[in-house]
Length: 230
Image 1 (cartoon, rainbow, N blue to C red):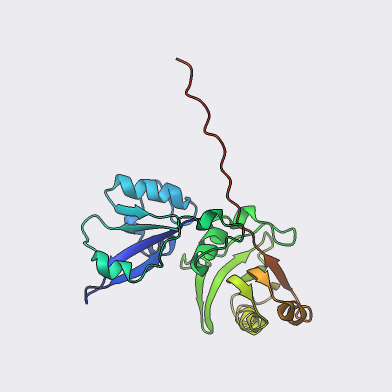
Image 2: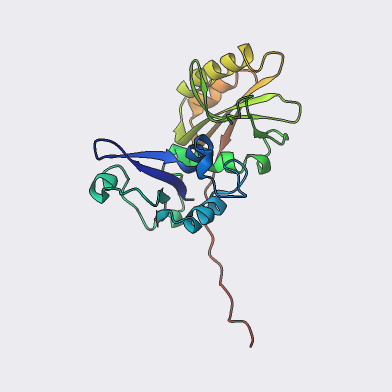
């Protein structure tokens, strides 16, 4: 499950990393014609950017893109990327290498992942800002979604094990939503982690409207088939 990263040079010769979709939503002038930074898939956007001359490097865990006219110092860039493990995707205990990978996957697929029987979509505020890394007065919500009745779902994501400390963090975000943009609507909390700690299960059991989910990463290979008959 690859993360799509925009790599930009900084004034001091270093590099700054941005999740591709987040960066394109903030810089719509760079979105390929006919595509949308929210609803187009990451692979579709990658194909469009490649046609526009963007440079890219693909590893087992990340796709790194840079603008055609920008030079990136490879030594400085290497210092901010984790070492690649070519066999990570095949590990039976595979998990998302970075929390942003889990966030981007969930955001890209939110409409096809029912939560408690509800079909969700990303929340979009009146300015056009969507619910990925949604800014609030008490911090950034990993993913903010709504259902068909416009009730809110606040996602807090942990790439490995979720501890009971997550409940307080999630409650803070839920409280902000309830007091502001979600006034008069039901506000639900969703914690997603590779493993849910028993302490977290106890803590969440006494908090209303909070659900716990564990994710699994699966990787399959199948034969590509034979050459077509001529």
